[in-house]
Amino acid sequence: MTSTLGIAVIGTGKMGSDHVRRFGRTVGGARVVAVADPDGDRAKEVAAGLDGAGAHTDPAAAIAAPGVDAVLIASPGPAHEEAILQALERGLPVLCEKPLTPDPAGALRIMEAEARLGRRLVQVGFMRRYDAEYARLKELLDAGGIGRPLFLHCRHRNASSPSFFTSDMLISDSVVHEVDAARWLLGQEITAVTVLSPRPASAAPEGLRDPRFVLMETSGGAVVDVEIFVNCGFGYQVQCEAVGESGTARIGDGHAMVVQAAGRWGGEIDQDFTVRFADAYDRQLRRWVAAAALRGVDGPDAWDGYAAAAVSAAGLAAARSGVRTRVDMAERPSLYC
Image (cartoon, rainbow, N blue to C red; front, side, top):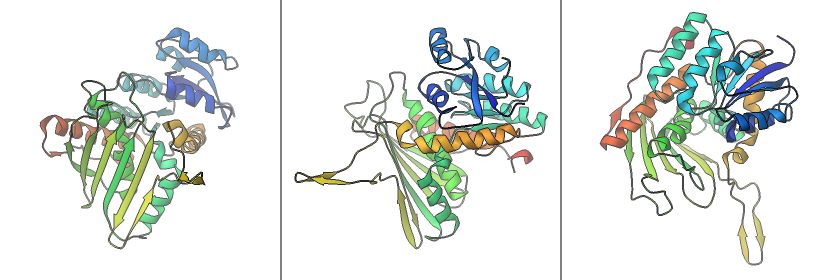
């Protein structure tokens, strides 16, 4: 492996293109040498802005391209498993955007593939773990600064949803971030999920059950609630308040600067996740590049991806049935202990 890590990027939509932009600009030690997307013209357009990068429509071809040392996967969830397994066959480190796989069974197959290799090579893109505010909240909770955590109150709002967004994706592609954040912040597993759905907002596309309220119970006796609202209209907000036995702590208010002028006061609301979590994405990529250069993982691994998929599956079942649903999880393999 050369001193500069050669990256294959699978998927050149909004997320993949944003990652490509970061390599060589805000993230050193790596460069993109191959990209893949079913839309060949889009792949060529992205590759054209890179020095010597190849454009492919087949992920396998990009993964097998000369100079590829690691793989970043930003394609839609259903395509993740096949690309990850192809990378693992070549012993290549992987950073996969969430969800790791759409269902727990696929995540189990990925863990089985890693077990055969005898090492962890897959990292999941739960970037909130790298956000400065989330990191401070984690430090506070770990230090017992507000006593034993009782509740996490979470809000996750988008200005509008993409045209392809479905009611299931509110849980599997959006609330999945709160699932991982809650597991990480509390150091507990989620054991049961309840989903409530008010009357859909007027701005929600026809057939989209938006917003929703997700209630999660944990193995340590805490309760996590999530308001997911992907067509709020006014911007992108991610907030979390921890309530402990002796205090509370809240992040995500976004009040870095408040302006008072002309008889009014206020600030700006981010309109996009790539703005709100820009620094977190940079930190995530820098640490992944450093770990991948050593053929390792430095962040949420395949077990974390599996746990999130298992909770999402319970959430989807709860949303359809309207009743509290227990999370069915396999025993944690020794490789991930």
